[in-house]
Image 1 (cartoon, rainbow, N blue to C red):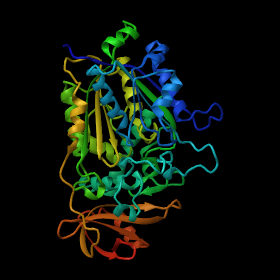
Image 2: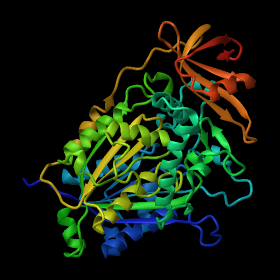
Image 3: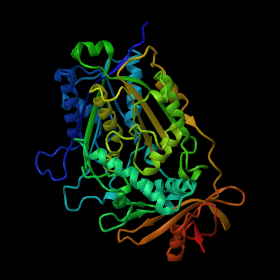
Image 4: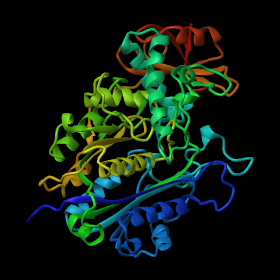
Length: 498
């Protein structure tokens, strides 16, 4: 039997500006509008009523009892398959991989994947930005994908993505061999280029080109948040954005799409998870084994090679995510291919788990327009834990992709076993990585150091109320240097001292 080709038949995006005061939509409303736009883009609004499947990226800004069923009702659809993702930025691409497999396996013929967030606080006492990410997840949520840190790390003040990703960045800084200023300038140049891309994207949240020095220099509008990051180096979470993509078999696409319209194909995807799930378990903070594995799977399944890819949209919640993706994929610093098509989560916007769906919609539009012939998107969940990759193009191949998703779910793990952990440590350890968390008044609040004991076990220690230690950590890169640690039994935490 001839393999079923997967067509990206429609895509739609919507941004609800911060200044908008009337006709405001909640996440479900934004999803519905993005879905209608994706259907209109095929030339057939009636398509929505005939969908076989609806998949929803779980909203984080608002709770819905059954968002897939509620979206179906809003669209007047009666799909025989509905599904809601877990939590994580990998979710959109993971859903696409699943939907494509179901279509290739002839379980479904057409699937809508949609997601949206409405984070902008329209009330004066809305949630603070740094606490807003999971405001829509109920207290009785049972999925363990809400957990990003271990209890040990939580006791040390590690709770948000903003606390964890700087640990990768400090390790990358050490590996670069550069002094702090030149390293930050590299970040500034890359992030400034991302801001230029966002400035030309019609659905970007921010449309202002930021010079490199503005991005890396602390100031009243760009406070330091977690060393070595300023606010402009981080994701812009509190946005109102939605996106939708419709996948179809090529046979179904012939019924709905104009004959002369250029086709966009999903060529192949990959998914993998790190055996070293949590930051405290990681042996190397400069790599992502699951991303390397997911990319290799996607390229092989798409019947292509890296050199044939015209463009990328690398998940860009923080600069370190892009640097590590380049390293794992094999993209050199002088590679002329674009690394983002949207401007990334810091400038385009980082709507909960749904950013990647905007990247896919943007890539599909640009492939249809003839700007690119083949592109790759990456999507990550938590701290390089879950990695999903998709390859899209203007021409199909003859390989059957029906079982790829099932293979990945059956055997997702990549990388080494977790490092052994010592909860309580007294003595001299060697620093592996660290960060310093700032208070809103721009003063250092506390530091967190990840290191190894003489027995090569992982310890994590907190630095608090010690301006000399804070200054020492931020003056030069201290990875590989010794630090004194004392266990505080009453607080059940290790404390770093000088």
